[in-house]
Length: 244
Image 1 (cartoon, rainbow, N blue to C red):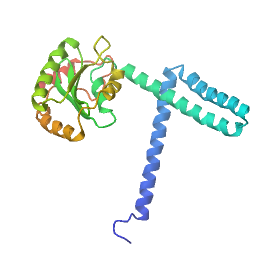
Image 2: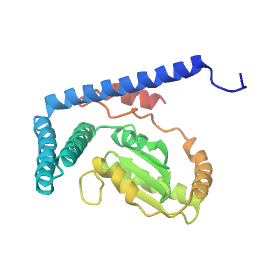
Image 3: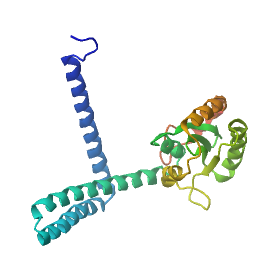
Image 4: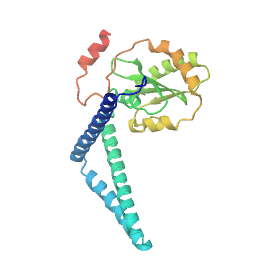
């Protein structure tokens, strides 16, 4: 047997692992669908409407051009795809709605960014769980603040000043999460970041990340790993923060 060639046992194990992962994903999707269906009364009507509407449109077109046998299955596939997209968007809207306004929500969104982003959460924070997070990407450096706008304003100014000393003329963007003028809603944060202009390349990102590592070593108050449940008691969390 050639060295390094996978054995039958290894191939079988890998295949079994892929099947298990696929099964777990299907179970997660089904659970998410069941939860969303119970909370969102419009979900099923919208999904069924997308499926039937697409099928009906392609049926009519197929009857006109004599291609029913081809276009109807295509309509069913596109309708199913549309229903799945509706499901995904309404689940996302529900998740963001529940997370909005909770401590750690912005950090959770940043941790789920897709693409070439380097995220460092909680580079500055207060005992009230206001926080500033740093994102390094092709646009440059983005400082994302969540919490009381009055308190995070000074945090942002301090971090922006410290960061500018180390990265030269690389653009720095600052964002405050919220729904008031000049703020970015939590649900729009990922879109906001992806729409920023590309100003640097990955080599510059690596250089900046190395220079800012020293700033990250200053451990500030610990933040929740994700959005805190609504109504959660804050005294214990704040006590833990003060001890640190």
